[in-house]
Image (cartoon, rainbow over all chains, first blue to last red; front, side, top):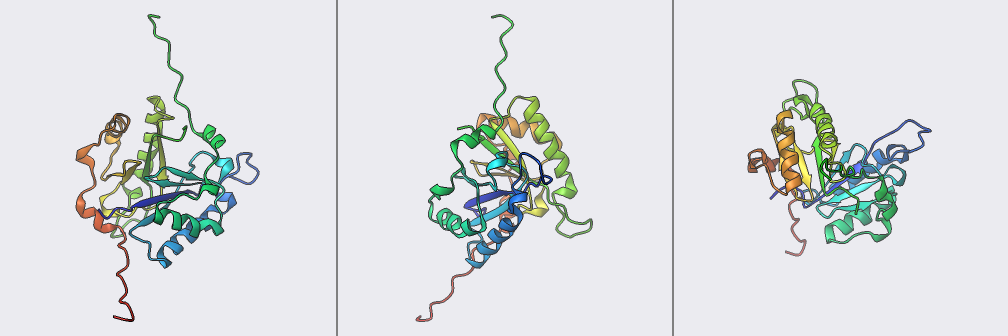
Length: 121
Length: 121
């Protein structure tokens, strides 16, 4: 298989300044995305790790957010200075615990709709 | 966990008309992305499935491309009429075999750099 072993997605969604939710883009996510690509190339990790930008991943107020698959590891508050640590961990099968998205951020994801009562009950 | 059980990313990268690589955007990927979101909502699958748009996923000439995680299932040539089949399969833990990216598309992904010869050999 030549598909990436580890695939990172960074939210680069941008909202207008002053929006109460804030946004990953407003906190420098596009610059972080560009730096991720450059570091993957500089370190010869292409073919093993791939990074893509994505639209809004949902937990806006904790951004910039990064999700790593197939592990399903969610990072939040990512900065330029965290990039090498995230790449090291991904390549070695570890998680950067200090950057894990906090459990309360999971409230940001959509919830399944409430089950409808059966017409017969 | 409230993070999505299945996370789909659709490439919506657009190149100018006439570019020899073509692009997913040029083949209607943005419309497909919007329709995916609407169908997930209409079918009450939010909380279980999430779809995001991404920048170039790499295998441009096979697009529109969709990758589904954590399974790491790559689909290519996705059209509006494939959306419900992809969502059914994702929710039921199946793969839509007819839409799997062909093996030759994997040549599109970056390869690891060739190992450098040791100075001592």
